[in-house]
Image 1: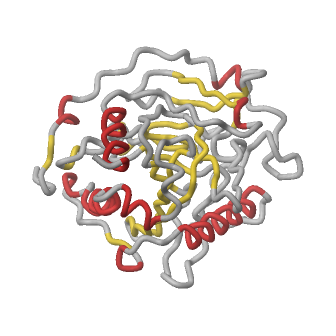
Image 2: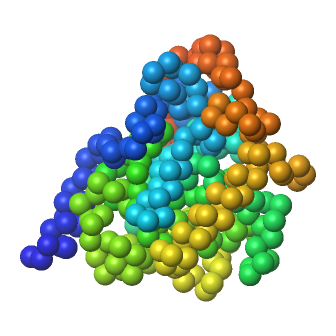
Image 3: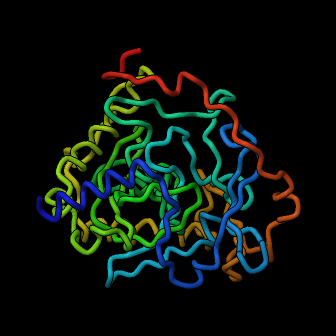
Length: 318
């Protein structure tokens, strides 16, 4: 058995035995922790980033550093959804402190369905902090607007993470999803501490070292809404993955959009909250979030996940 096959077997073993991610973080990221509030799988739940030293809230959107290193092709990400799980969690750009919350539709928290042969989300799913897909500026090449959220990431390493983990990752490539008429990039990354990280240098290496992974990723994003009676998603650029260098330019562009947002240069259209504790010269800067008020709802045992979430769907059947 070759080394690549052995590596994939080890990854499969770790997939089935979740462990907390332990990527080595560059300071000051290493001083950031997180805390749950309320009851998971209800509208009451929030997960806040906090400063380990003083317990003060930090914004996942604005205060967690991207720490984008163009030379090493690495950056930080925030994990919103662990691989193989169903709850649809995301950085909430509208609440003070930008906690991670579960998405809500018609008053109910949302779960992604199990589309055979997958269980929940196919990767550790999250976002790059300090990036923004601008909904007010049209992409000149595609004629599409951004989705008003931080730039999405799919982490393909071996560990199954937890909500709020901050990871140092290598950037590999990206896929341009068109979601409800908006441009919604999915950046493919791998934990820098993963056993395969040194062997994978670009998106082409993923095709070689992880056969089927990128094809399955595209299929999942194309079809995951079918069980809800919605049409298949579409992709820009004929569904062809962008390579590492092209993806770096996308990240730079979204970081620049975020800089304009945080500096108050975006004054019309859809504007997320810009309160932060890190950038004194920005209009949204505050000394601190009201941690006493925001952290007054101690974590409780998670609510029972609805039984229908366990159902397996085949090609979007009801």
